Length: 389
Length: 123
Image (cartoon, rainbow over all chains, first blue to last red; front, side, top):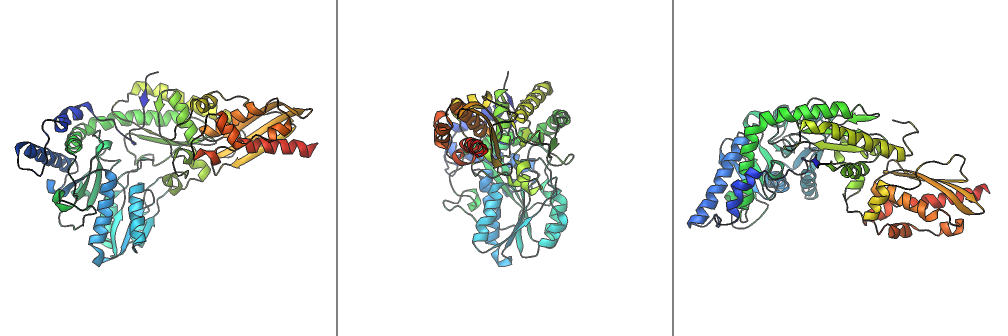
């Protein structure tokens, strides 16, 4: 059977148009962007061009508000730690939702070790942040509150505009990790009221090795990497021109195709959700309506996610799971626990994330493989016949 | 996700001795759904020789593969020999397991020992 890739939330392949666009920057066009000779200038132009494309994708005030980093992880670190440290005179408290990416959670924990207070904000059973709790927790000492635009494991889209209103009323700055959402749903930092926003190249069909942090004009933060002062001093180190130029082009393509592509993927997604949830004791995880267009996530009672992943791979279908057994820490996904699943329920999760290679014609094969996988693993499972939930 | 040996994948895809035995001479159960692994082993014993053995397992790839392997190793063995089978023996027969899987998903030998103890207690 032909390969069916359903793990676009983990990594998107680089779009061939992006490779074509950025390839020259790997060889003849490349110079050091800080140099004045001509190839240096063209490298600088490539970065500036990418900056404009990124700022358009998120409707930033101007391209100067975009800082390139090596990854979304670095952008999350810089946005949170850099802002908290620079604004320490205003307070020593930070907050994040319970379903943030590990690079956000660990940035918060780093600050906590350095005597900041860290508040975790709970979410409901569909992954939507608890707005009352947010209102209750925040104070003017809460320098940075971090809430993701949408979650990568359960696809839930957060009410960012409402969150922004609360943060700006009760707290100080809002950081938004838009890694999972960017290029898939419209993001407008000005309209949404976002102060800091993280983007990832390799979640936009761009090359690995680039990320970006949007910083609203007027917000002060300090560097967490020290050196020659590239990126207006916020991110020293020679720029990865190939990745940055590629990220810019990838953002441009994603923006242009977003509307038609999401319509196409929503159609496939909804068919998958409808047919897969018809399987006995199978449940959708995340929110049924406030959901990323390419995202379908489930849990199956009485079977385990790594087994599901391995079994699906036998059909040449690549999926993801939040099961403990597939992680290095052997802990189940903190996202699934945060939405209230018990450990034994979180073990049986499956995440399907669609992308440009997927077609509606693949749905019957996917559903058949899932259904056979679940049936086979349940036949092996001592828990299934015993009923339970 | 971790890299599994070819042998682990063979036993995962085509596990041997799957199922239950009605009125077994010995029954062993280890693990806990909270941890993500539950193994049950059923044995039939004649003259202290394991004549039939079946398993049911909830768990990851290595949990299923080690269950299948331990039933293969124990089948036809004297119960005292079968009691000597260790987690390490099972892992070795599968050409090794990833380090983090050695403890949590390698409980099959324990389930076998429980089943043999159950048989001895009933005698």
